[in-house]
Amino acid sequence: MKSLKTKVIALVLGCMLLSSFVIGSFSILSSKRAVSADSAQIMNLICENKTQEISALLSRIEQSVNTLTLYASRQIESTEKFKTDSAYVDQYTEHLTDIAINAATNTEGAMTVYIRYNPEYTSPTSGLFCSKSSTDSTFQPLEPTNLSLYDSSDTSRVGWFYEPAKNKKGTWMAPYLNDNINIEMISFVIPFYVDDVFIGVVGMDIDFSVLQTIVDETNVYQNGYAYLTDEKANLIYHQDLPRGTSLMDYNNGEFREAAEMLLQNSSENSLISYSYHGYQRKAAFRSLQNGMRLVLAAPISDIDKQANLLILQILIASFVIVALTAILTFIFTRRLVKPLLELTAAAQKIAAGDLSISITHHSNDEVGTLAESFRETVKHLHKYISYINELAYRDPLTGVKNKTAYLEVANKMDELARLKRPEFAVIVFDINGLKNVNDTYGHDFGDILIADTCKIICHTFKQTPIYRIGGDEFVALLENDDYKNSIQLLNQLQKDIDAYNEQPHNTIKISVAKGIAVYSEATDYTFQDVFKRADNAMYYNKAKMKSSV
Image 1 (cartoon, rainbow, N blue to C red):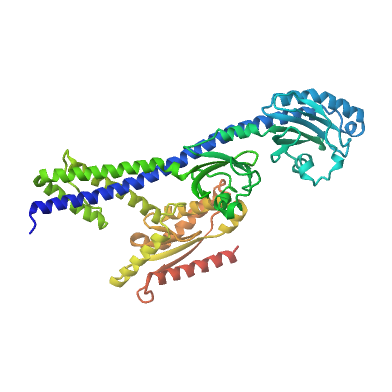
Image 2: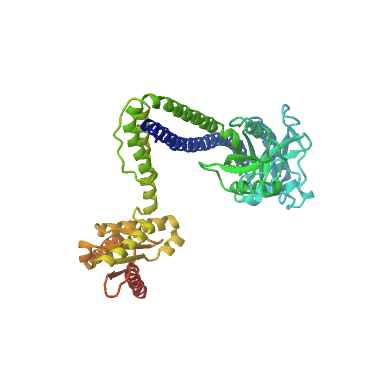
């Protein structure tokens, strides 16, 4: 037979191992969740900040072009003169040249500036075109492109003119390589009108490296980096892959899942996951005002590095605690027997799902720490379970109980009907016209209609649980006083609805079809039988309401 000391030692070590496993598991899971949440927050915050930096740059460029467009529009004295007098057009162009060069000179990254006129009214080479030969040179006037040489559908050559004209608003063009000076550029072009007459376009070509520099300077963790795509998940700038690469199709769809996410506006507060060259990565992204997506990506190994270090520390700490406990157990066996038995019983109850425990032991040693850890664990489990139950049984829109709660109470009423003769009634409510409200005003107004209707029902049936079992359908289970006064309450409900509809600020009127059924032992074998009768009564009432309209 094993001695009591041996049994106690075995018990203590077993409990400590179990406790270390439980607490360690919770700690590891919590650390992973914390690191995951932190990484999502960090990456989205960095991405948001860089997006704002790029957006500020794009806004300054847009402001320069807008200002030049406004000035050019105001300098035209007569559209008829502009259409017919070439000398006037030449004088107008000469006047704008210095202004345009000055605007471009003061615009960060500007390489060309141009004001081109509608070829229907002027020469196909009319307008001005000023360009730099390098980033350090000054703007020099050059001969504008002859628009008559190209069809308006040739977007690669004259899309900069016809696309903004078609859009009738400022348009960011896709980046392109200027072969003359070997510089990648991105253009912003605005069509301008005078007296509703399309005069032409004003635009600037910006050195794309200005954006690339910001993107290259954007990093996170050890190996994280940023890149740009368009709104269709085609690469615009990436440190490894060429421009135009479709992330939808790259490497047999390796990026597809992430690429589909890039069709949205942002990753919000979460991260998207994907595989690249066999390594798992996570990314955050935001939309720029020119339609591009700024993506910030990092390997999962970098993101989880801190969590893995913390897990290692937890495992080492757990091992040390167990080892010390084993040594101390030999010394303090008798002192530890009683509290350990209490903790063992508590652990068994927790394992069985019973959280109604009270740990009374308090001391300034490891056992006291363990007892406190158990108390905290139970406290957190109570909170988690309460929170989960709240989510499981509560309708988020109206705050009343949901269909899950309804099905549970239906089972309870079935059991009650088998044991005794309960007195209860079921009322089924259905909101009329919800689909029309959704289609006419939008689902937000539909949600308001549902919530307001539910408030009125709850206000009338104060002592009765209300369940939302469908989009526009509610159920009330009447017992006790509400059961006895069901007809009066239904009449009061209609009065409350009428009072609501009479208020002038309530433009959307409430109409509710109602059906009631009282439990009868002779005809109702289950709660569902009562509900069906109430549901049929409701549909009868709904049909009657429609026919009376």
